[in-house]
Length: 386
Image (tube, rainbow, N blue to C red; front, side):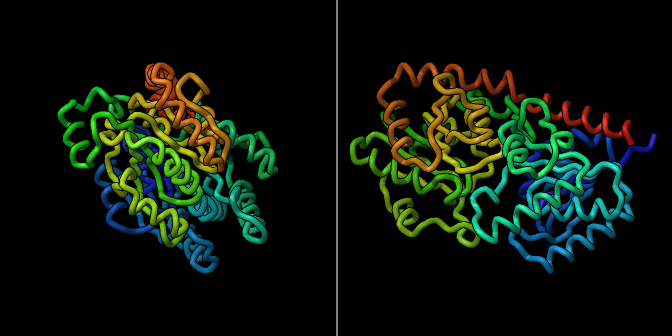
């Protein structure tokens, strides 16, 4: 029997590789899967790793109307030729380009996952433009999947769409978490010690870790201020930053960057393909982001047995329960970060209790294959309605 075509689209190929890793290969058993994103070696790598066809169509992450129209036209022509049953987009630019092109090509099932809303931090004319684009994306879609219940509420509050078009898959998350892969038992004490030695982390050090883009929206300014204050009082702590600066899109303040590069208790290792060993040598995640959909980093840290300090935003406050597997703090509040870090260092029994609960909560609620199966069932139910 001929399989129906499923086309998955992201703006840049790193999103295919990281946001929905493994999902394309899983869906390949049920659909003819094609992945579309901007060209590059990462896109080719995704094709090989997932065993699916990949098609390059250039898209930008910035507001570029002429390039965006060109992308819509190229994608429209491609979809008219392929005649897919389902087009499913992720990330904001792929959303508007993919949903508009799919609508024009009369694709029966036009699906968009919302994994965060950058517009929430925008102001003035930029906010109005982004609001319009979001509404247009949703109006062209047949279904919209916020990847957290908090995000669903924000979408409804802003009147971007009616509730009938919205659905949160499983318990939230775009891809769930492979808890067999993110498992602290995979790493020996010897392996951990080798990495600690290379980073000059001492046995008595309490290591806070941040994983993500080193940008303002992730709360990096507040984190560095809080840690700088704490480090003056405690020399047996380290802050491990795993992620890259984004100087073009969202550069951090020069003062923050200088502190990251010069502080002897801050270790910046840049982007890492495999973050597990870095989690394994750490004691707690600090993730004071301003906005998220359903953050993979918080699930990964939990699966690796770490308690988390997270900001009180959608996604984060659904994964982390105050006093059970972590600490939930106000957004954009360096004093709150400082207080939470102090508490984990000073109250060892409290920290140990959070650690004990961390992995079980992720395993019980966000196992990857449960999320994949729920999405597959959603796809199959939509096919019947066409």
